[in-house]
Image (cartoon, rainbow, N blue to C red; front, side):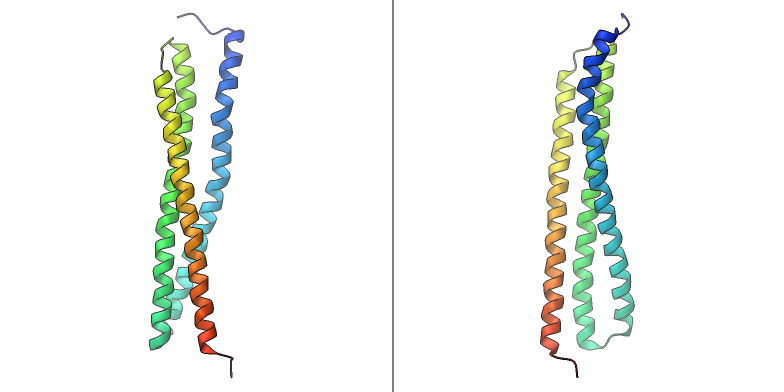
Amino acid sequence: MPPLTLNELVPLLQTAIGPVILISGVGLLLLTMTNRLARVVDRSRALGRELREADGDNRHRLRGQLAILDRRGRLIRGAIALVLINALLASLLIVALFVGRWFAIEIAWLICVLFIGAMACLVVALVQFLRDVNLSLDALRLELRDLRADGPAK
């Protein structure tokens, strides 16, 4: 197995830049998702404290809000897992590029599978993220409806 020359290494590095940029972008998405998850956890804890002190009607309302937060938390957790799998697959894709060249193995099929898998995970994660955003708006609508139903403060 002949060593890589600089003329062979540069195009290989250029090819690997795409997945590296993907990993960088996905890192920012992951930061956003973990912040949303932290917000869900904090809000759930606050509502749990309120629930312990609430009376009948308020208990029902708070339980509804907690159920929505539970669903949101599961959606975000799933999205985070998929984004992490995306980054793992992109990393494996970079490794495969170098291993394939180093050992002169034809692994275009593996590179395609890794790339398609990474993109599929990203698509599903983004759908989960959108579902979370929609659920948070549903929760806001419920809260606003409850506030309107209570009428003006006396």
